[in-house]
Amino acid sequence: MPDPAPACPLRTLRVVHLRRCREVAIATAAPVVVLTGGNGAGKTTLLEAVYLLARGRSFRGRKAGPMTTRGERGTLVEARCDADAPDGHLLRYRRDHHGREHSLDGRPWPPPGSVRPLRIKLIGENAQSLLEGDPALRRTFLDWNLFHVEPRLGALRRELSRVQQQRNAALRRGGGRELTVWDQALGALGERIDDLRQAFFAHWHARFQQLTAAFPFLDDCELRLARGWPMTQSLAEAIAAARPGELARGHTLVGPGRADVQLTRDGARLALSRGQAKVVVCLLQLAAEQVHRDQGLAPALWLLDDLEAELDARTLARLWEVIGQREGQCLLTRVATAADPGPYTHPDTRLVFHVEQGAVVDDAST
Image (tube, rainbow, N blue to C red; front, side, top):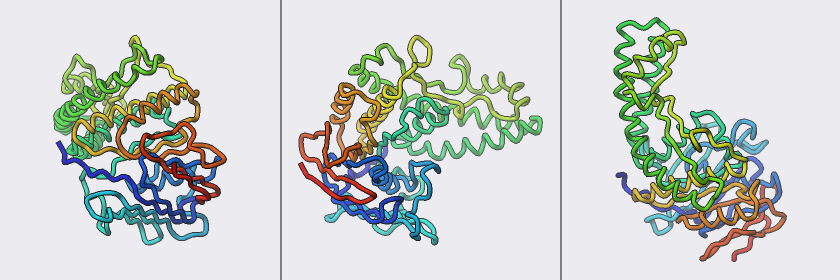
């Protein structure tokens, strides 16, 4: 079990020249921070800033355009986080023509191969793409959550990528003795990765099933892990059986690189509306967070981007009640023309900021 990561609720957030936000500085020391504003006001950009600090990259694709504000030379994001230091720790992300800096108190962060001490859980505007998109998205989602309790997975995944590349090259050359070597490497490595995935998935599945009880549309559904080869075969047997097809196509067809996570009912993939898919993704994140907490990790920081979209009032209230039971800080956005927290309440405190044209123009603490 890894050492518990320090709890790092944000005390302050400063954003300079990130998309529409030319310069924003806010105090964020509250369990729930609500960012309100119209479409395109810059609310999501503030969530993106926190994501940059945690992951060193953006969750937005190329369609969002250049990261740095037009006409400026670079982007800077800084935050003070609660930790064991009297004044907290300073997290910084900076990107300009000199390169990129991602640091904690002036030191490169996180160290290579380490568990990131600032964990985040994101529910974005296209949450349903996780369920409807390529299986690689779901494998990455599974493995990222697994990595937090099994850091050795990172090295295993890198080795899997190397082995598959070498094996695919051997397949394109027609196989032979070289392919036998890579078959053995893939078989051993794949079984190790699958063992780690299966152990995590058993706990994740149990926690997910507990959470679905509050949502009738998920009655009798089943979360399943398709490991990438038949359950009736070892990976070595599956590799041997797939050999003719792989030689014909020139790439690997079985193994952990073909795994998928599926939500089913009566053996068939569950068809969901966009709102239902968002609920499912929230529950998957919540279930993973509960597994992490069971393993001694500190609470994650939650980023919720327009949770209300595509949800009726009753479903939203039920989902927020479930989310509200988690530990850890939450930053969320909602489309509103004033600093109105809407349905988002917390038993302790909350902060509400209103954003217009990339700037915070109003705040109300309640």
